[in-house]
Image (cartoon, rainbow, N blue to C red; front, side, top):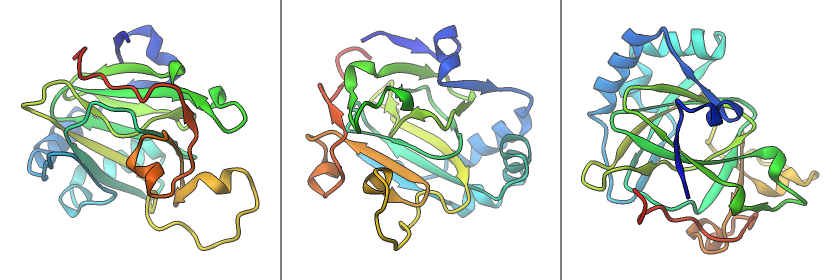
Length: 212
């Protein structure tokens, strides 16, 4: 698997680089550096350390057009795909260290299944604020250096990734909704699939440990 950069033209179909918010980026990175970093992968939808920053207002205004926004993090160590998810809105990521996103396109899902051969890897340099489009499938970041791991901002619309609405399943997508504003495709080898998430990935459970 080739690891592209988000600065390469290949990324344009999946997202874009956000510029012009240098002061907010520096403020968020300083706060993000104080957040926990587990041996595995940890995720917090909203962290007061980030949510109460003046920069949170800039993210809401400039990235989400003034919509209520949550600033959380995904931190730790990881090299595997395991799952892919999507939201109805873009997600914004920013890392204190370089990290890698394993991503694909929503329109590559066929009959509820995505072949993992469609997945591409993109390296995000530290300090680069990146928008991942709503139609881009993504999941936990991967580290570039196991000694450093990753600490990555996850900015999303308010209440995303919190408890799933209590409702009757009526559409095909309802079967893969695992939280508010979160639709997830699990690989059969993943812990999420063993925990009951619907299997929606076929092919190799990609692991980039040997190419980073």
